[in-house]
Amino acid sequence: MGTIAPIRQMGTWAATAAVTGEAISLGIFLTPAGMAKSLGSPALIAAVWGGMALITLAGALCFTELAVRNPHDGGEYVYLRRGFGPRVAFLYGWMAAIVMYPGVAAALCVGSVPYLRALFPIPASLTPFLPAILLIAAAALNYCGARMSSGVMTTLNWLKAPVLAGLAIWALVSGHATFANLAPIAARRPGSDPLIAAIAGAAVSAYFCFGGWWEAGKIAGQLRNPSRTLPIAFTGGVLIVAALYLLVSLAFVAVVPLGSIGSDTAFVSAFGQALFGSAGARILAAIVVLCVLGGLILLTMVVPRVTYALASAESSSTGPLAAFARLHPRFQTPANAIVLQTVMALSILFLGAFDRILAFIVFSSVVFLALTVATLFRGGIAVDRWWYPLAPIVFLVGCGLLALLLLAHSPIPSLIGAAIVLAGLPLRALLTRSKGAARAIPAADSLTTDL
View (tube, rainbow, N blue to C red):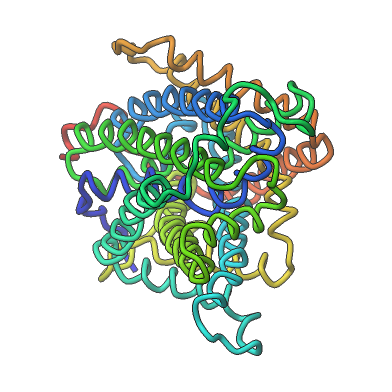
């Protein structure tokens, strides 16, 4: 393999699909029951989704500016390296490539197994191997070229929007949704959690659902005309996700009364059965599988480019990271980084540790998102946008509140996760001890030379 500059072969549709693809995944099916039962009010449900959408849109505006300034693969790693230096950037890259995203990929695959079995007559003997098969298939697709994998990713993730919108519309026109289930709009139902605790828990759940909208920045080096493509992708993608989440959540409650809500699985099952009768379980299972596969393929596409950017910046031509700083000579993909992520995900899957890893790492991921946006205040180039400095302030305040909620709710996992991230410092010292002259990330103002 040799070091080859990536070819920009993705357009606006693919970039927007990257924003929506990871956000619209299992979350919308795994959180609505808990949020609805805890909040106990359709108005509060809408307010939480709307508030998180506002914070997310503020973050999307900030990420648009960062990505347009740095139209190269790597996303947050590139921005953090320029804003806070190589050590902070390495900690993010170590967390993302080795710990967090392989855990997310493993969790997606495990979570999809019951739905796949609802769709297909899969032998019980094959079931334990399904998550590994999905991981390897996604890796193989992305290994063999960005054009093919981006085509599949774009198709799957753009299908999500009309399918989810169609669910909500069908609930309305078929007569299964009734506004009586939403009334009274503002009053909380008996049995709801205390107001502050309910809002806090729902906000964290909404953050999980929106999570992943920032992934388009990781493939900025693959995008044609990034100065035009990225603003459309980030802002348009976030608005699509927010509208779908609000629409689907209210449709759920309009079909299944708040007072009868049990577990998430039972809630979604009741929704599917109400809309489609005996075929409801299979139809909802197909929608879940569509959402999971689109997110999995996207993860396997974008995360190896963080590893590639990190290795390119941190290694010499002969250092231990050098293998991950090369593109495949034929497919022009970060093939070794794809293999690394897949091996890590399979290892996490084999150890059954993905649930613990996700619990440990969420707090750190929020902190890194905040640090990424904070780089806008540290750059040498002034930000001349109508939303500055309001958008980064709104996003930083939102991230700060989320971080405090996570610390209050899960202090031990959050602190363990922070320790895992900080373990990257001695690792970096070991890996870069003899790196020599590392390759530099292209200058932030080199946008015109890349187009």
